[in-house]
Image 1 (spheres, rainbow, N blue to C red):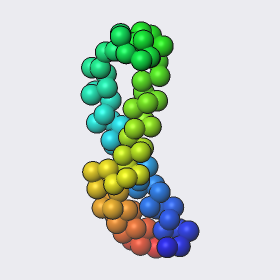
Image 2 (cartoon, rainbow, N blue to C red):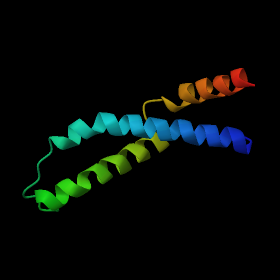
Image 3 (spheres, rainbow, N blue to C red):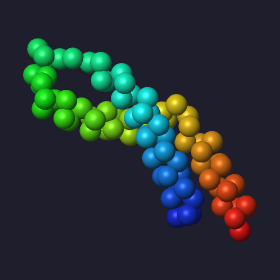
Image 4 (tube, rainbow, N blue to C red):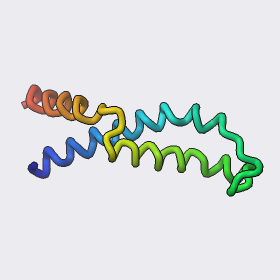
Length: 83
């Protein structure tokens, strides 16, 4: 895989990570953990979006929903059409 194709693959995976983050955000917004390991409260609420983003990126890196492959194909088609 050449560097240009690797960059397109990385962009497709990043897109899938963002899509998963958008799907995960409402799910994590309903989680309350006042007695949990992190104690809940404003501090935990401030860090929750970062945790959600990290989980989404990890899920995308391990296959996710399978969005990255079709997105990559479309990006490559768009590049070819632009030439």
